[in-house]
Image 1: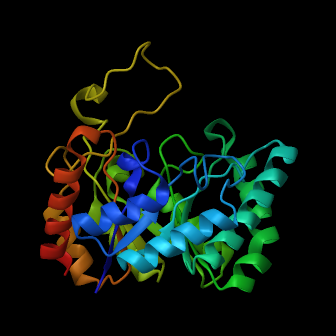
Image 2 (image 1 turned 90 degrees about the vertical axis):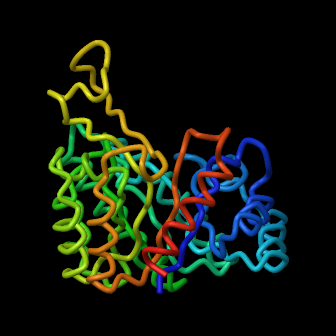
Length: 289
């Protein structure tokens, strides 16, 4: 049985974070995954949450019955700048304190390094992990890593290799469906990627949103100007507005007996957020129970 969580990203601009749990309950969700937002933890910044914020969020959990199932912070802990890396490790320690106060026992994050110096970023990531091992183990919190477009790790196989290299049971892998074509350099072989992560005992979370294949049509599915610019474009659309092979995704997850977190993470369609998130929840319940 999977835990289906809502990433309330599309609601952050119109309501405070605790209120997004009430929105999730209204839509029919029982769990949320809190992605970066200014109230709580913002990209690469010290978490803003204080004791009063934690109390409000715990009150919202109690009132709604909606559980903060996971957090999805992004910190530059693979930075080549040692001052920056150390600051981000400190940010991680504060986030773990907050997670513990909310009784969140699972966190999903990114490698967050420099694609143009992948080896150096990898070394910095391992350094940060080694420093944070006592903190994760102190709180009993699991960590799930995802490869991300324009990160120093963009491919599925490379990300799974790094996760396994840490050799800690509490470090797992998150498969991101809207990154499926970046993870596979356009191949879109979702069954192979899901199975290899599952066979390694590392598949803990799946992000669900659709996307078009940026490698299709001579690489012109998305047009970037000027051509060859050092950027990466990707999207998080509702199921059906993209090219992810969903029948294969769902049948493979059922076949491997996946029972972790499935997070609905559609971004950028705020004007239709309620309708999209309700439809996504209905599809996931039908496919995964």
